[in-house]
Image (tube, rainbow, N blue to C red; front, side, top):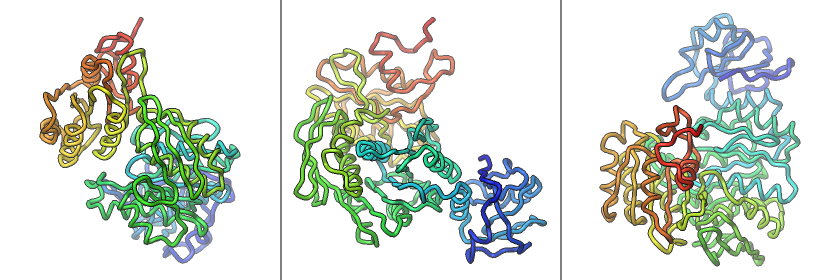
Length: 499
């Protein structure tokens, strides 16, 4: 991680840390102009922040950081680095976030920052929120799994976690670009690592909390606590938006000291919706808030998308945006990469690509597809990384219960998955007749498309817009959408680069 720098005047560490730090060494006021948590990237004058992690401990590299020219060390315990002051703090992650924000001039003070978290739907909600705000005349920047952007969007590497320096830099870019609002997507891991430290949120949106990432968090209760951290960053006047249909989210409602709005379709909520019509290309629903209602037609399908729209609508109401404008903002999001993305190349069956990786997300995607399918539902699925066997069984049960034919691909293997991952998946899919396994993902997609007939729907799940290497491409990457389009246009698999 490179150093984060600011204007020469810098930030007073004594003032920033105040009573939080025990200062060992020089008591002279020290002004930080740059900082880093990577000892290998330290430049003369940097403040080095020693962060403890699951794999490595930055305290072990403090001596190296000082030898490379660090002007001070922020740490959670004393380190044998002499000649520079040490600021011993209870939580270096929190201090790191605060320092990064301070070095960039505390951009959150010049923006209305909205945080979005949840097990699924985060990216879609972030983009819907941004669209609603733009429909009302706002200038909005987004930081989500698709990219970082305000005036010019920059793509984000798959699985790249947000860091305090990246958050601070991007919020500062948004201020420079004249943004009024910033929408920030946050995972549970990012919240646990205090990425939001130093940022006050104008609103916090929680989409849902399901049994995902439990291998990392240890229990559903720990996972809920991690998600709940987002509301700790609300400003005094900040508002929380929660899903009344989700029992774990409702538990947080009773713990809040802030105003909140609830959304829901099955349980009583302040903002609700009723689906009128669903087709493979669009759906229509009525959005209701109090005694006002408006019709919304969206080309993204599924009940889970309606739930995401409700969260965005609630945020719009917080900012006193009228329902007609909210509907216009929701309808403007016609598709998102790898989020129930339709692939239309003149074929007589539907093809949808979705990033669903958890059992709950896959269930939502297949349910949405089933509701608009007259023929068979064909599912292509393969884990994208380390997947506990318990989750594989859950995925298998979803595939078995909700699809008519499945093609499982084992190209992305892990210690937990290979070599028995497919058998674990299939053991969960007891109801499924003749499941198929193929080691190459592109070939698996080809098999599913060959099987499809008029009226069928093929759902290609697990990767979404994430690229991967396919045979015959000489190391070049394609994603599921590109693979499906090439196959539907008559290119055989494996693919070869055209002359």
